[in-house]
Length: 278
Image (cartoon, rainbow, N blue to C red; front, top):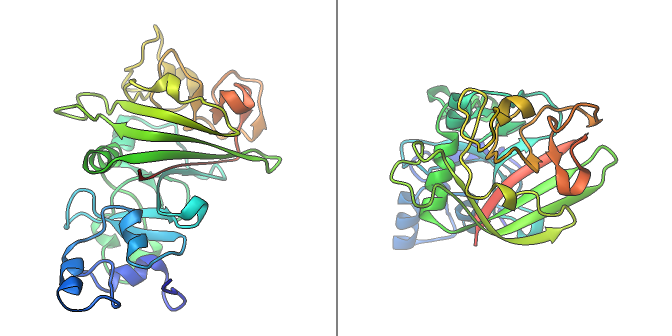
């Protein structure tokens, strides 16, 4: 395993912009080929020997579009590309369509997968300014279009209890000609219980909905009712982008809810949605 004591993970990768990540253990033609292949996801980064949790750059859109992402390199063997992360309520997730399409937050904090802006590419500033700027849902579509992925949803409550749910197959708009016109529809299958129960299969096949783009099956706007944005049906059993309400709440189903574990009146402390090649 390579150690990253001298530099933080993202800065280390940015120090060699034409070879990301650097692979000093590979020689000759193999080294040259790896330098031309920028990482698609955290699986690629792990395979290059970078096996510490942290923020790295991936390139799902191509070599000129770096995307800062948090890589979970330790949970269940690591290699997880984290696309949603919440833990303290510092970032509002009650946002409109463009924010979820483009991404928001910071990969070293609470965030929804996005793209680095021009000032985040290169230099020390890249390690400290990780504001997402583009193609959140589109990045998820591109990733799952290029590889087969599994999904893991990690949950924690305010009593420090943890649970997870896994799905052997995860994709976004897998059969769409235009992913956005398709609504970035969700597909999950192959549930495996890690104590959380299955709150996501109900949403499989649904389009992503926000308060300003209602694409659910309910007569009213599920995103507005649930104070979030998700692949709502009529309306949800999972509302991981809902209000950060700090545990038990009186309002119905508008917190960070995973109904099969904590019901509709308990807002979770911590959530991570992450994917890994299957």
